Image 1 (spheres, rainbow, N blue to C red):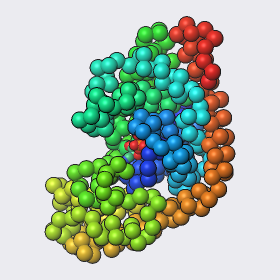
Image 2 (cartoon, rainbow, N blue to C red):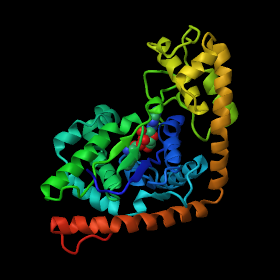
Image 3 (cartoon, rainbow, N blue to C red):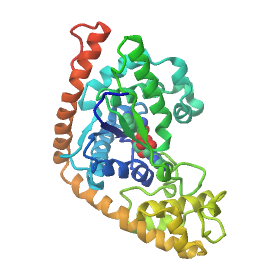
Image 4 (cartoon, rainbow, N blue to C red):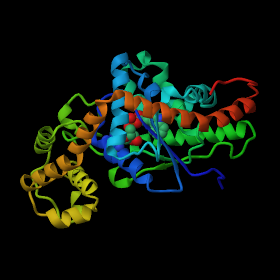
Length: 342
Ligand code: TYM
């Protein structure tokens, strides 16, 4: 039984445009958790994770503000959730190093995301890309967070976080020092797929911009991307079972259901029997109505970068105040007397 206060932590990388996948898979849930009074919430822009692959410095600064703007434009309120960027709170890097010494090579060797991201160029990948999940564990555990809203692709990293927490607790004889955080994954939106190939995840790193909806896309572009989305020639089924083996149809119906906040069964009860010629315009209208206002709000917020920076600075102070006592205890536990600046 954990004795830890319910606390939510999650983050997103500032490595390019956020997509409808980030939005439906994670951000919508971040916002929904704001209504749950029992949780304290921290939402981070993980700029230290971004540099595991090369980032142009000026682009990184701007991309960090853009993710912060997307958080706020989607409904996160800096008064109700702590919004900040990772590099402003030194506890992440400090605890990240300590966890690099707790995690085992074998654990990290199993991470599928490293294999995907490093690809054939493994020998040339940064050491940071390999040890990425130890920093992620530090993000979460520096706050003793108990719940982590994410999409499906982060599940394995969360399992590793639990392994690190458990090993730390065991190695230093401190049962329950760190909680074993739970992933919060919404099954319906855990994996939003590419518009060009229903077998691949929608991703900001896909070379084709037509494969994704970016939160900053304008109405015309959003409609065009939906119109051109890959489909099959069959009409939509009337029951969810009829979507089996039809990944593109399943993805588009799933997006429709998520944006209109109804079940897939309800979408099919209404649109079953329709061809994509009829369904796509309805989906395009819905996506434009949901996403375009977020992009507009982001653009307005980004006109005042100083305000965004001051929200992040304020959030970082509040975050650091929560992490400081945890880090102090970690240093003491390890016998690193007097160490640490967090
Ligand atoms: P990142 O920046 O790749 O993605 C941010 C969040 O968006 C989710 N996501 C998706 N969900 C559904 N369908 C998709 N196509 C899709 N694409 C992305 C991701 O699952 C994620 O929840 N390692 C993390 C960032 C991170 C973090 C953390 C998360 C760093 N520290 C601590 C939670 C807690 C990442 O790269 O997410």
